[in-house]
Length: 400
Image (cartoon, rainbow, N blue to C red; front, side):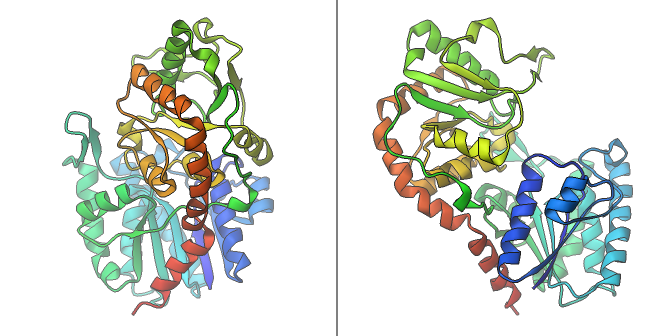
């Protein structure tokens, strides 16, 4: 197959997303597929050399203020359509075109392309959504669709896409069951599940023997939406209760982040200074990250549901593939990984007190939980494999 990945966010050379795109392209190439990657015209030399990114697209809606807002987003969409159409006209023989971070700025472009007389009917479009069209309501503990101008535009785009979706030339996709359900409700169209693939062979397998004290890691840059402030408060409670000695926490916290009240939360505040806490103050390369996971007994993800009820975080998948049990917020997408592993500890509510309860449950049952996580890791590796991702593609390639 010939595959084109279109990703304007490929401009900088670090972070999770370049690793994901590069790994996906490498996984497809191992099966003999030809993969081209269209990135931003200012893509770094690292991205060009290591991932083979073709510098082409003139905009980056993730960073460009000129692409934010409804009117500017529409201009972005028409420009994106024009550039992609020009590329496909020059080279129309792709089996698949992947857009793996579809936002509203792209949606109209693909809707118009799908109805263009120049569209190659042998080319299928995979439109993967990493953001939904709803807001999470803590009061009702569910998502709600607002009647906003952006949602009205999105519904119009999906109506334009309907013939191509029904003809199976455009595949609407999600990485989590939660996002799939939301998109199907919003679009009234079928949405396919494409599990997020990882390179599991490069991850160290954990053991079922917990360390003493047990090591609890929170990978990923500290942020409010990730509940980092709740975790710091929970650690303070453990310290005040005299039970912090049972744990060793490792947190990735390279910079302060802003709380909703405008204050900045620093990683090294006196109230949590302890020999039982280690802060990583920078980005980690793959080798350092893998070493960290190999020394971890539990990965804690106290993510807030307002951001993560249907949103993916690669950390949970990699932890599951390593055989590391998760401590996670109930009602977030992470419970999908925990269900696959058949192991995990829920944080019942978004509060420091509930984090402390979950941590104590993990400590009290550490050996059993670690053994079950190791046993379930193969299910995670298989479900989140490139082979599974590609097999779903092939099913749609052979569909009438």
